[in-house]
Image (cartoon, rainbow, N blue to C red; front, side, top):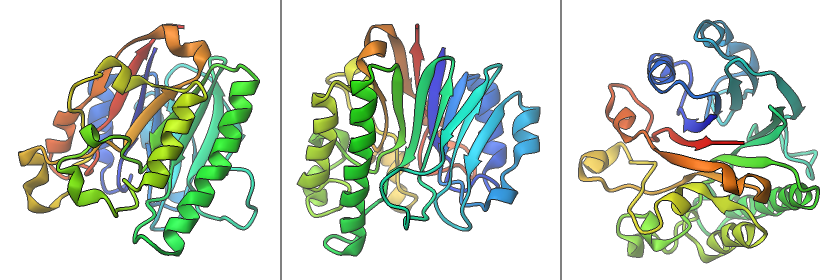
Length: 257
């Protein structure tokens, strides 16, 4: 089974890119972030025509997450991260697909640091960790997948010294990420490529993609039940070079259950 994540940076404006990639890559399950579209403007007809069922949580102009599946039933669990009824940002959607819990997330960016946006990020992470701890305790086959907006290590960023006071690379958020790993979640891409430079995002500015001046923000974490099934994975970096593409590239793994 091929499971992928892709921050599309506006699903309607980049729909041709998404559809081209879906046709080329043929993932079974796809998690999308930054739809930047209200609920009623999700292009469900086009997604269905490409062979995928979908659930989604939209939001006008910002955020938005979706889960797509090909020839698999999607059972929606929740469309918001528990713990804060006043948080209306569309950043989390959870479903059961093929007896796996799929947790699609678009974790807050948190910039500028310091400030209320960073505080919101830390609070969101606390709530997220509560949910992930529940999944570990229940010993469920689960996948945490999406744009974490966290750069885990120095190897995951071009010129890390420039990022020390950025909300993506602050000590607090990197510590939280490693606490997830310590609880039993497996960073699938880093496991497959322990010593290699792997990026998933390249800014539109300064010819970052051409210089490979990137960062690794998009992650696929597996619960202990799924560790042994990890077969392969990678980043479809070439998609970032397509015309009118997102500033992120799709990330995928092949999982044998």
